[in-house]
Image (cartoon, rainbow, N blue to C red; front, side):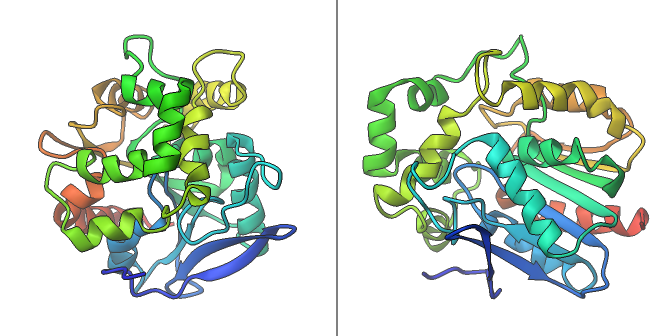
Length: 295
């Protein structure tokens, strides 16, 4: 694959028997650790510019979730595509790397629910937060469920077009930004999802969206939301694209309420992939934030 701006050599780890997770481990071994967790339908490629902007000083750990990016993409018989599985995988990877001390948790999209799900049992390790267009709590009551997500979550037709035509990943590469992606960047985003089989996780993530107490991920996301206030004493940076039709001002308000001391950068002219639209602003701003709040 041609991956512009991704000059890294991913590592591999057998996260479960027979299943290999790809991840980046960039920067000095003794550097302060930044764990970056992507969402759906992106992969570690989303974090490439931040890794390049930090890895001279900071150790950047950036996994591709199973089924995503350069990780293995098993079928349902070999992997349980649930939020709990994602949280377990992050724990297994960090344990494998011997990361038991302080970390900065950087999250985007589903990475917020995964990262804060992991943080429920590792709160003492999380010393700083970088939060970009994500969630760590259920859908706010005032926020309607976007029809585009309902189509993929609840419709056989939606599931079919995601698996058959890569509709979600391809669509996000256009609709997730306000500044049009260059063609080679867009191709890099969608390239891991090049067959029906390889698109399984982009669909399973949508089908795992928790909306009611009966959904598998509900209890974990509800507890994460309830305990989010516990992180209000940590330095937090929030970067937000206000043109995101999913993680919009309703979700931003939730984080503002829970983390009232956070440094907030909200952009009227940025979308869901805020690091694409505002990389020139956000990468140095996040670097400055980390430098100002040493561990």
